[in-house]
Image (tube, rainbow, N blue to C red; front, side, top):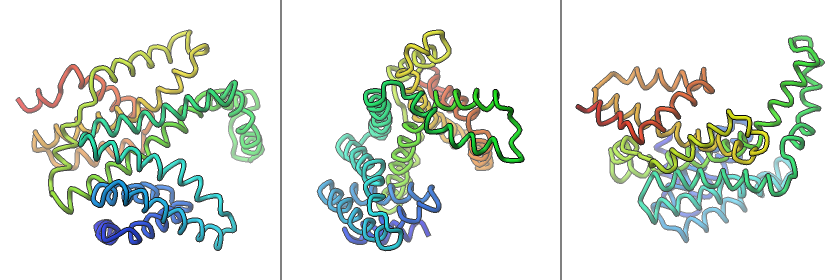
Amino acid sequence: MLSGIATFAVQGRWQAAITTALLSFAALMLPPLSYLASGVLVLTTLRIGPKEGVKVVAAATVIFTLLAGLLLGQFYISGVFLLSSWLPVLAVTLVLGYTRSLAASLLAACGLGILVVLGTHLVLPDPAVWWQQMLSPLLEMLGQQPGWQLDQMQTQELLVSLSGMMTGLIAAVLSVNVMFGLLIGRAWQAKMFNPGSFAVEFCQLKLGKQVALITIVLVVIAVSPLQGSLSLLVDCLPVALTVFTLQGLSVVHAIVKQQQKHKFWLIAVYVLLVVMMPQMVVLLATVGVLEQWMNFRRYSAE
């Protein structure tokens, strides 16, 4: 089915635009489908060219606006997808197309997340307070539910904790959407026109020591007494962790391939990533950061 989507989308501008718009519209009910929509944009831009990529985005915006207006009565939703997904994906795809570097394009997606953090801190005097005001009614409603197990003080502590993390988490989610779309689109392109090349490219991914050092500094700040006065830098940490989680997955894929292990090990890692996401993100990101110096893949190959 996924191959069919890619084959249809790559046939031309309108096929790609229709596929992107329909997948994005379906993502309103099933959010992961937005990754496939982003993947279609990546595939068509890489295959047809940047000018056609811009035209696909414009056509998809028109189609989505008509769908949202006629079926939901909310034309503005297309603007949300345009700004939060399609334009960032297009920008990062251009980086991949011109540099031919998966690492550079993933770091560009990470950079977009950092820009979201910076923009939020520029617009809002105190993002944590703003999020607290936004989340307070939701937690009050949850606190009135029969199954809610936290008392009023614990609920307030949860509210404060969530409010402090929301800016970074939102930026990380936006970066993840772009990164996943980039990987899906690049994998489709490789499967259709150069089978096997994406697996090699992903297993060889290396983000660099400089970015790893920056991530280590962000971790130190996040666990130090300075976190309160350097909240902007702390909010950048989730974005950095997402890209190094992908680096960690790259290491796992490479080791499994080099050691000729059964694919069960990869499946187990991804299942754990879903079931124990916070712990696995920290573990994989740590592996990804250390890989810049330890080179686990080289030792595995020996």
